[in-house]
Image (cartoon, one colour):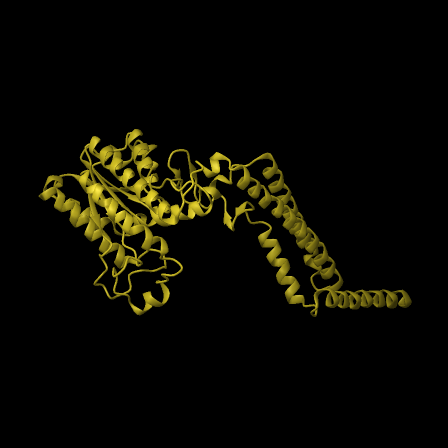
Length: 408
């Protein structure tokens, strides 16, 4: 009995030593229980995560819901169209102030709408009315999404008295990003990624294979977990996991190849009209034209509904001489070479187009210089977003202009 026990121990030690040696030869480093167990924990967590379908590292759909009319959005602010008991829509003494645009407008709505509400409440004509401030915009929107959403809102019976559109950045920057993908610039931002969620049979099969293999990785990691202090079992699991992982990588590569096939065939649902632009300036000029046309139509839609329309060009740190930068802003949030190109090229074209807006009766107002004499930190990222102080300053400027319109 002792002899057999001795042999078993000897075999066990031989397996451990040989596994340790093989790991060293293959990996080029010493075996580590901590390293292998950390890997197993990561595999068990990652293998249960949802979101296999990614394009350029962006999960599809990217935390938004595709909408058949205005591209995408999580309809916060649109829910009242389905709720008959919504106060803003059912209040007979209500005045509805709608804010639209991209993420900057959404931040103002979220954090500073009561400032705008306060200015409207002080207008004599609205003294005995209930002011309701709602949102009909969404982050990453650009024209004509605001126009389309407005038409949808009104067609669903939405009430409107005052419409505030705060935009500009996305119209020039995100439109150019579309063109880099050869996607029609008037399509929504990241439409290529969103449309990649329209699955062919081949793509569905590949995604199914990936999910199946990820399940195998998870269960293998779980199966070998109780043997985590055995070198031979850990090495065996590592070999199996690497094999399955390599198969997943090949399936992912095949999934990416289907995107390459789309590049050649250019399906309309993903790329839109195959319009060619001769230069970057031509792209910005086209985007400015869409922006201008959309604003004119929004003004006409608002007027036809008995509402007043106000269009504001949002501030941006890359507009020349528009901000006295704090040391924090200059160090962290001002990257003109890498981020500011679209603003420097596109904003002058928007300002030129704004003259046509004014000639067409649009109440357009340029907010790009609103922070010019503010030395403190206002911006909080390298794009265009501001802190609470910046949002409040925009809300005050907007509220004053809206209120002045009604007391002239």
